[in-house]
Image 1 (spheres, rainbow, N blue to C red):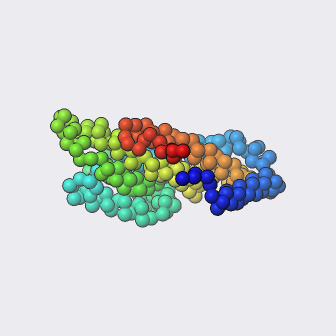
Image 2 (image 1 turned 90 degrees about the horizontal axis):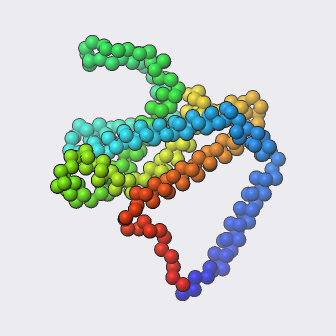
Image 3 (image 1 turned 180 degrees about the horizontal axis):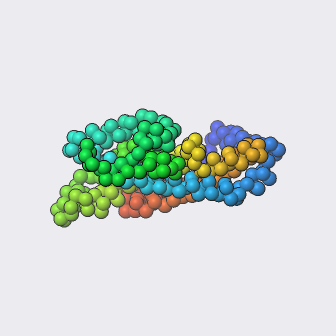
Length: 279
């Protein structure tokens, strides 16, 4: 059969090219975009500092979220009823409320709990900290992002664990592996084939979600450009600076995700790449 594109496809391609050309022309010729201002502030110290904070929040939030979501996924798959109930309640609360509200709740924790103490329940207190000093904007941002991310990643991790054939666990037990060692050495690496694609999307979503921490006076990328355009009133160019950096980091994360997916897909069917049509 002929593989030549039909006239409909050619027409659609022509329309897409015209739209792309129109958009490019608009971006290059619209004087209100002020690309000179964009270039001036793209590497400004405050902008780069805010970018570093956004990337750091994403990395720490994803790391803590992964540890917590793994524990939640294991609780959901266990025969421990109280653990399953706790994991279900956790995901219900954190998935059912907006991230913005969670960030504000952590930031204003001192209103409900002026002091954070550690001790024996209904017994003596061993240590006490002032909540305002303990829950800084950075800590509040990390807690909000990590705990919210864990609630979403728990379901992804659970699906990944369930995708591993039970025979793999039986074989690990036959070889004398402890349950914990069998999970980390056998189950977890295979589950990552299923977990990585949606997890990569979650990481990218968290990167964009860091823009919400500006409401708690956290100097992330968006807060940094807002501080600048509140002084010089160059709103659109400064927002373009943020867009450029978000797209740059997004592109790097996408490349990293693709490499990790290829790594964990080695030796499995369907990892050789797309099937090419024969002439």
